[in-house]
Structure formats: structure tokens, C-alpha cells
Length: 123
Image 1 (cartoon, helix red, strand yellow):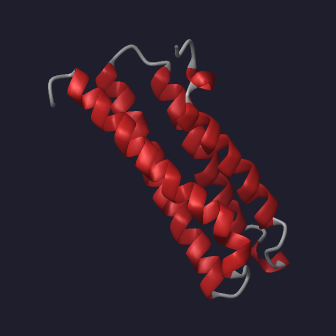
Image 2: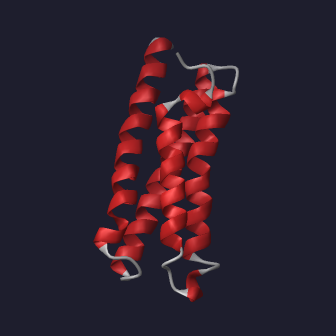
């Protein structure tokens, strides 16, 4: 039974991703401290934050909207991780855990949004 947002597996996975991305950011070059790494921190923190905020809202439509924002932040972060790999700031192996969590979160967010839409009657 879900009593609050902390009980949601999707929120827990988003928190795992946050910890992993903060760990990876330490490997980025110093010149990226206020550019790419800062943007990655904002994107990854946005994911569990929007899941929690949406869960705390009074309407299912608002909840879906916040989940959509979380999904947008997840895809933004995934792109930033791919940029790190292409620029050789991170190896594919180093980024693999975070990229897999991004993929899993995307599926989980989509499933939750679809479930909530079904409760609304498909809107």
C-alpha cells in the first residue's frame, strides 16, 4: 500500500539514480563544474522531486503533469550522460548503471502515467 511518495518504487529508483549521477559527476573535468555537471545535477534532482510533488497534489491530472516533467528531466539527463560518453568524460561502462536506471525509470514513469490516465477514463 502506498502511504506516501517514499513508498513508490519509481521514486526510490529516481533516488538511486540521483546518487549514481552525483557519484559520476566527480569524474567530469574541472571545466565542466559549472556547465554540464551543474545541468546534470539539476536534471537528476528534478526527477524524484517532481514525482514527490505530483504525488502530493490534490488531483490526478496534476500528478500526471508532474510525472511528465519528471520524465522530461529523465530524458534530458540521459542525453547529458550520452554527451559525457561521446566527449570521453565517462566510458560507456562507467555510465552504464546510470543509463540503465534512466531506461528503467522511463518505463516506470510511462506505466504509472498510463495507469493514472486509465483511472481518469483515458483522458
